[in-house]
Image (cartoon, rainbow, N blue to C red; front, side, top):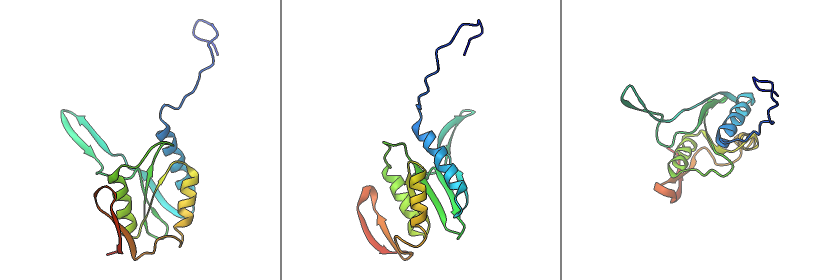
Length: 145
């Protein structure tokens, strides 16, 4: 490759400074192509100052991706980089989705998505059972509402 003056440029070294963004793209592509998923979208959350006003997007613990399976169940996916960890409020929110009969999980790549969607087809936790999480991880098993 050459620059504007015709001088040779060294090859560009590509680094992924945003591994969670790359994981998010992979997870979204996999979900959108999966036959069990009716729809899914990126759920932006956070806050910004716009025209001098503080605006909050989403809610505490909101998953990165929300959607719906073809059978009508809610889908919530929290995407993490290879070394990323769920925050306590994310764990609680994913469990709330499961307790309501939905499918919720953390994914780092397409393998996690495929594994979790396969498991949601009849194996795993029953519809009337969920784990109620109190703040920061104490849990007990209970019937779903």
